[in-house]
Picture 1 (tube, rainbow, N blue to C red):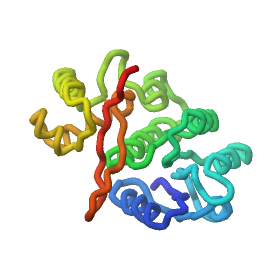
Picture 2: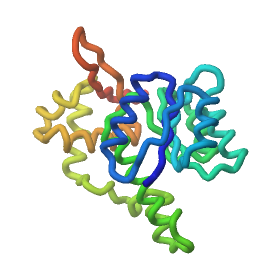
Picture 3: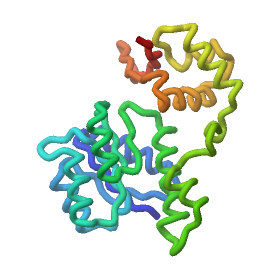
Picture 4: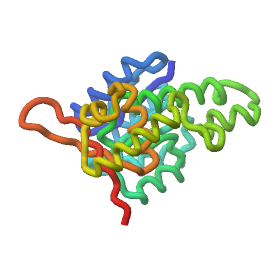
Length: 223
């Protein structure tokens, strides 16, 4: 089992992440820390393999925690889970060795993808004495062959979704786009995630008068 430490100062968000992790086989939450000092203590006392950490925390921020982990040489991997969208935070996290960077708000499927990719990387690289180039290309770089789409996506459907987004030109929910392109929400979400990752659309949280907030997708306007 991969031991996970959640570092999040918002108790509700921390609990939501814990519940997400409980659904994914191969991972176990070893602790939840609300700040930098609590995180350091749990890293000393628990068998932690992976840390999910926000950048914005009271006192010392998540990037400084990541820096401490690297400076002290701890054999721990880190996934940033944060609302920080500025490129400087992203660049600093990558320089310090973060294995992924999730921007809030995110869907469970995106966290699941990050953790499944990390688990495959652990199985292919961390637990073996030697690797081949294919192992590195598949699990370290995490990229499909040049020109290929990620597994589960096809070019025709992707072009249909991109055309619908361009024609709409305004923010939309996944339910609205699903009706327009005629595919299920589950399938459509994969294509929208791909467009988000390629900076074609962005996500914002839409709050209604009652009930849970929903994701609204916003087409980027070329200048």
